Picture 1: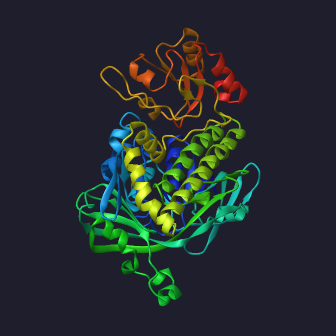
Picture 2: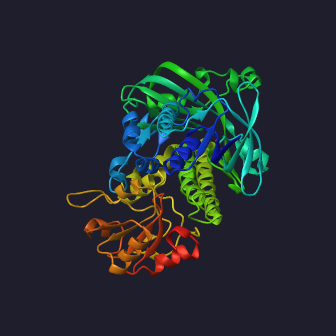
Amino acid sequence: MDKVDVLIAGAGPTGLVLALWLAHQGVKVAIVDKAAAPGATSRAMAVQARTLELYRQLGLAEETVAAGKRIDAINLWVRGKRKAHLALRSAGACLTPFPFILVYPQDRHERLLIRHLELGGVQVRRPVELVAFEDRDDYVLARLRDADGSERECEARFLCGCDGASSRVRNQLGAGFAGGTYDHVFYVADVDARGPAADGEVHLSLETADFVILLPYTDTGRARLVGTVRERSPEQREHGPASWTFEDVAHRALSSLGIEVDTVHWFSTYRVHHRVTNHYRSGQVFLLGDAAHVHSPAGGQGMNTGIGDAVNLAWKLAAVVRREAPDSLLDSYESERIAFARKLVDTTDRMFTFITAEGNLADFVRIHIAPMFASVAYGIDTVRELLFRIVSQITISYHDSPLSVGSAGAIKAGDRLPWVGADGDRADNHAPLERIDWQVQVYGAAGDALRAWCALHGMPIREFPWSAAHEAAGFVRNAHYLVRPDGHVALCDPSAGPDAIARYFRDRAYRRFC
């Protein structure tokens, strides 16, 4: 019987990132997937800035960016005219090292993650299916089925369900999955296209209740289309989406972009769900990614949210496995991530409902009011920055978390650590995050007592000479900021002494720093 610290069911991006972060922290991990091979279709495409920041901590960001297509602008079209243009680089240049959206097909993305996981000595076990499991309070006993039908057992301290929207882990837990399914049928197509919108930027066309999003792979017309299918005959409705082809899609929206499709390389239809489970944790078992939440593809948030789940949970699992922290630390995973998932599902639901609403009033608002509002809003620096923050996921915060204490300047505990890039003698304050561990950052000079406490307890402390850029980012001179292994601020303390940080770990029975 296999014995591991963490067993992961499901080797999509969420499961692979979870395995990578755990292995990087010395946790013994096993990851299984019932599919005989990784996915061969592009599926999720958008990699957001926050995900790339997390990849930077593992040394993956540079390779990932080089392998994908950087998107520097999003355009809104109505009736053949470009009505709004959002320049991502100008909106995010002062916020993140990655002020763009990266288009990187999921099949290639997964292969990159698998390769790095194998370099760390972990192989995805295929085709191996999780059949059932028992939570025995201090460990989980899982039954696995191999390709030949034989079954074996695996004992794991923790089980993580990353096994998708039809999650067997969630179903066996009996966890709810409240929500619903949209009436519309949507399509995805990988195509070769030509026309004014085949220019390497993202383009969104709104045309009555039809819409299409174009995500480019290249600057020369290879792209992903996502849009609505138009049911054209009773026969098609009778046979369902499986019988539909690219000829059945809503071509009004495509025509509005002024593009012509020369070749369709892949076409598929699907219905969109919007659901969130009621619990992310049950005993020693956790749900992540699509097993915990599904929503519309509006904004390219789904895969990135699952990866965020994985990173949030991984450092906490590692701390508990190493006996540095109590099991109660793991309760913060649900409280931090479920709030964001519910907000995301609500936001994308409203966006999707607006885009696909039918009727004369909805058409008028979509075609006349929305583009005018977008054009004006995109011209305001603060609005552009806010939109980038939301789409890039750098605005995700855990203010209400039991792990978040205090504020200093514009920064509240729970915020992602604001980024201040290197410039001349000024160092990049995200560079030290590549050591996946707790650390203290001080902008200015740390007090002698704080330095002594950090030295005594093995806490890395990073001091950055005070600059106008740090002030602009919201930091307070000489205050200290306790940063979690995932780059979020845990404690903000304007004082120069170590009392607050010592109390922080003592109150949470975090043995490593007590």
